[in-house]
Structure formats: structure tokens, C-alpha cells
Image (cartoon, one colour):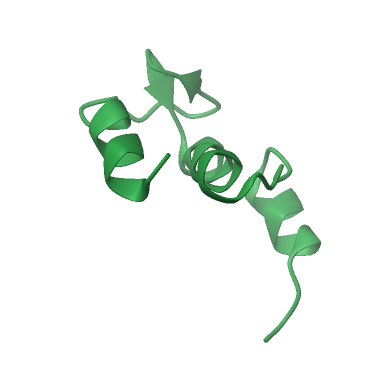
Length: 57
């Protein structure tokens, strides 16, 4: 799947704190969708967990 298709698929989905589906999604869940769809990488759920999972470059 490519980035533009993912964006089109999720376009118009409202922000919802703690949300992770088409009825509402938050930023960290959206990053989970992007990374899983584009790169096959399973990111942790929360922004804090994603930060801790990453490495400084």
C-alpha cells in the first residue's frame, strides 16, 4: 500500500483521544497505521511508548 492510498482511506476521520479506528483516531494510532501499512513495522500504541521505542539520530 502506498502513502497516498492510506491518506485517502483515512481522510476525514475525526480526531478522538485514545481512538484507533475510523470512528475516531489519535495521532499515535495514525502513526501505527502508517508504519504497519507502509513498512510492516508494529509501533507501540502511545506517543510516549513510541518515543521510548525510537532511537536518537
